[in-house]
Image 1 (cartoon, rainbow, N blue to C red):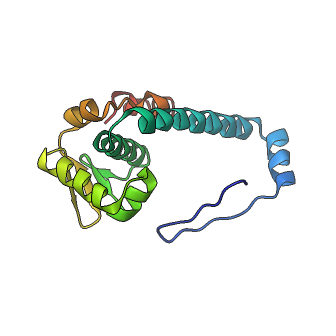
Image 2: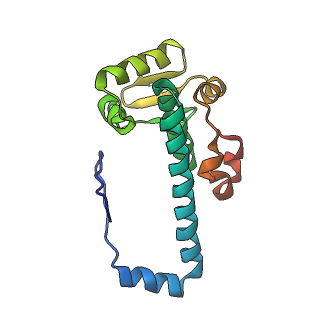
Length: 156
């Protein structure tokens, strides 16, 4: 890897040696196809986030992030209504978005004041899904989750 990763919540992980991965590709074509599909979705997500950083204001970028996290949480069966557990702190969200803690706080305050989100006790809720999608220019097609779960085709 040419990068590092870290977990912000307790996590378990493993390392798979390269030769085992190559063996899985050879012996399990469906698994190889799933890994390839995952890679294509990662590339699609990267392209979306390049657009996000280059052409959206911080409040729109954060709204976009929250929309994406809601859709991903929904796909994993981890949502309640239009909300999900948000283990990240405001500071961590700001760091991920490349904005200062003060700016992060202002952006979150704006999203709250406009009635778009509620965020209390590590639970984030998008109060007005349609308004948030429009505000943040969010279209979940880049996640390709409708292929995995057709019920996600209408984005929540």
